[in-house]
Length: 383
Length: 112
Ligand SMILES: [Zn+2]
Image (cartoon, rainbow over all chains, first blue to last red; front, side, top):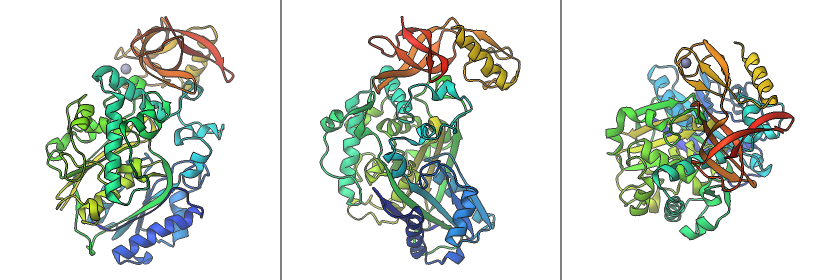
């Protein structure tokens, strides 16, 4: 079960990435009432550029353990972007059950602002380092005019408009409603009044996606400590779990509006509808809409209309991205999975103050990401 | 077929303004992005073929004053490409043209 969780998130962190991760770790240890010497398992992720601006670190997880003074019996790095941390939680629970470790630290994040300031995204990092190739397909992909992942999601949003008639206003409506959740939460980075017109008047980055529909990369780490013995937190664990990894490229699939979330959620669709609140990956407005449809929460093509008609606040029809989502909280190191998990844990432990879901029993979390949104992790947390 | 042979053959065809794709002789599916085994059935019984170079825009996006999208070709395979022409929109028919992009001749989609 999760015995400690913490975040250290800043729009621009002036200090070293090592101080940033230490801040998250120390807060989580304090909540868990554990010492560094109690940690005997370590899981993380590495994404070129967004750790400290450098493209690579030799034997990354081992170097971090060494720096933090962690002697682990088990070390792992999961490298499929946003949903990786959700998979790490599931693996950590199983490792503990098997007796392989007692207290496993999941430490996810980095200084994303470094890549942002160089006007690149994680997927375009190869433009700064010509000796790097992101894919085996070389010039057949990287010499074209793409701006992935933004252009990739723009293509999905455009296709969704074409086949289902969803509209720019419907996507903007989702952004406005998530902002209202952020305003109520009192702990979001981006707050204040926001209207559908504001979203539609923000610049078009890659049509049809506007600037305000796109998550903002920030600096930060989240630390989660998964333990065999309970501490002072509610004893919640994963009730249902699925992960899916797609190997075909988007141009090779028949329908790009169907993501691997359809596969990762397929074994427990009935349970998803019974959850009390929902944290869905929000790298872009369209990402949330795809997951609403692909996991069976709303029928295919209906997410836009659903968002228009329904409240997503903590006391609404479908409490969704209750803290405002990473669109409003910022996306540490270009990966939002930790933001979803952190908010779910705040709510489940009734620590969300003015924006608390009333007596939550279960939460559905879905993460989606990696190269070409190839990866999805679906899970339900409960007692 | 080795992967380098596929890339070399693609590059040769681009230079002579021909649009290549890979035909799987086992399952009959076609694909574009070079793999020495078919991503649909795992067979290595494949061959490089020449496409008609015609298809339609499956989806497109505009940024940096240019269009980019997914093209579905007549032979059923899909690829990312820059798109050129007036009033680019999803569903419109295209044919490929070729030009040098950063030192490599590559196909791009041009509206019919
Ligand atoms: Zn085949």
